[in-house]
Image (cartoon, rainbow, N blue to C red; front, top):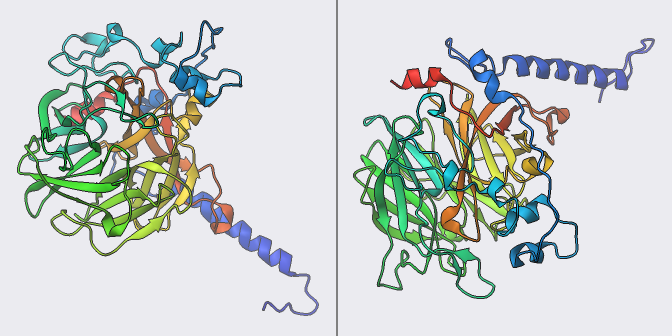
Length: 456
């Protein structure tokens, strides 16, 4: 109890508001000095080279008058409402199809592009490898090999026909395997082949072509010298809901498939793995029918989970987690659960990777309101840190094409950490402790030349 001294004008409200004022000043101070760039490193947003990546680009797309019948996928979504931009996106016969899925004439071809077009990313355009074929690495992630000084991009190889296993089944492509591409510059990608292939004959095998393999991620174990792959394994009806594990002596495989399991006895669907700076790795997966996320450390060889598990974002129905770390704080991008249809991304932050995790709001900036509320018509898969450029990352996402999944596109955009978050948290008097996570929309962008110089 606070007891006031007789004869003074001090009162409880004055004391409370004084404390609030002090906390506010401390918070503003922390935002200015919070874990800023250290050791003379260049930080994104504090240097002219980065300002163009943080410029806000707007989109003004007009919906044309409807001609003919709308596709079943779009009409089933909103049969009695005014046509929306999302309906146009889902309608493979839309007159705006070329905006969402540009044709081969506009493809990014690193072997032909030169001069001023070199190293530019064009979100959602077809991206060709060094052999001139569209890259097949959907739902993927990237491993940087310090010894080989190369990036390796792993993802779902979906170069097959899209179909439905049954009338109410989701669109799917038979398992072909996990594709791998290598690069030294994150723009020119060489096809290293399928590093984990489907099983053609044994229908009981987890990797039989009739099953589901999604979101493969690979990390390197410094103690064992092995490359370890984790992935979502399921049946055509998505009832198996498990994780699968494979291992290899080389980043380009072949990977030997070991087993699948339900971690800690819980269903597991969208997942990712994250290797921390101390060498401890973690599995993060959507569980309890996608109503919450679970996170667990892996054991020392990265081949299984430990007995430790924490539930996070309980009841929030989030999937497609992409986890990263900056200056001692853990961040994560997630999506909602709407199947192949796009939805709003959310950013989350935590001081400990095991939680508690707090939601900071929608990180998307630019485009237009629909773009921002659909994660630029894409879904998160990975966040790639750029060495030597603290606070700067590449946000990797997939623009799914449920009518033809092999033609799904990649949306890579600049992501920065800095500034105040835009959603009050449950404590700290509503003043967020975390820096804002921002994903900037650009039709055309490239990394600053200084990053290329650092990689040489």
